[in-house]
Length: 536
Image 1 (tube, one colour):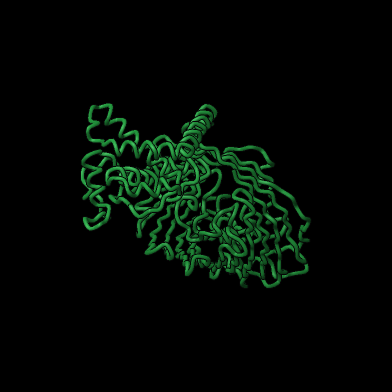
Image 2: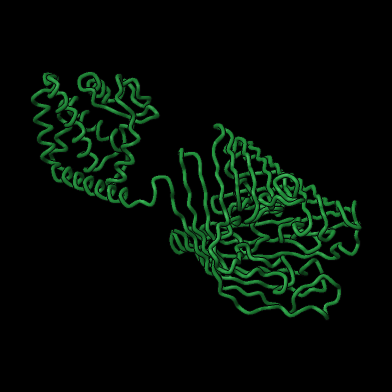
């Protein structure tokens, strides 16, 4: 800092406080760009009438008299919205120049309003010398402001929309399922079909339009095109091997999500979904590192509990109401219908398949979360899929394609013992009842669980190392003995997400399914993938 700046310490209290207090209150902390300066300046509070309004300024402070005089004589002081002055903050030459310029503007205003007698000649001389000393910095700031204004004007002239943001995501994946044979449901391993193990290269592209009319609401419109193979059926013989990001519409661009969310009150959030209703997008599933299809688990099973999947999908409609969503205790209620737009018998919003779900969540801190969830599901005919295509075939439709109701109970939890480690998991129990057909009144119990560990910033900032183990949905007891799973399958998954840039991540991963379809006669199946995700 120049000698003139050091000599400024000898000026009168008014001039000294004018230069330093305005600089400190106008800009807090180190500023390296005009955009940062503008952002910090937006946090100022208005003109104060007494120095006692600052909670951190005491009569015993060495600059108290100067600040008091500054308020009474010049009215040239501002602080922060929380009522603090922060007089001990360090400042750069740019900050000092900006504060000096603000004070000069105030002095000129006083002179113009015929109150120049409040300003001494000595103060004006000192301020003039300071202005000359910092002329280069002031010119630089003015140049940066002019440049920023020009850039802002250009952005406003060419912006996509004043109310809508466009976000995009592209996934490219190399994937393969491998092992000896595909799975089946019988106890004869001699008739299992061949496993389709050719390596595939596929993609998924999504474009999201997010529109807000009030600042607190959001209209979401999403377009989707994909050709990612679903490792099931004729490929592996089981849903247990499905990827968490699979989607295949032949790369045709389709509207697969349309919804509108708004605040009914300060404590109530409402979301109406015309198509693409998925409960897991609207409430906490307590699996923060692995729930995303583009950056989370590589498997469908590892993303979140299957209790959230029944009747959800691209053709589903729904309504979710969240009470106190940001509080320690919160409550969510959801209603999802897969065929709401179909007026034929056994369909519609209330006469066909549907899911009614309620969840009570408790988050005593940022490190701990617990959720208790219950859902009542009704499905008919080809809609019957109680597990959302995750577990065994028997668990998905324990009585075949007949009308089925189920009561589903789940517990979810997450725990973060340190900044880097996140532990999460869930357990669920389903009691299903056949509502029609030859087995009307028959019952079946389905059980599943998962335990997950994620290590953040492993190897580099933004990377995630993950391990997922669990048991996919299994029919543990059934009145129809032939549709009860005889053995137990286990899911093991490892992945490593590498964040290359803010927009690009590469995730190699491997999942291993032991005893597929909960059948010891089936060979172990492996699914490996390298998922590359681009976001913009």
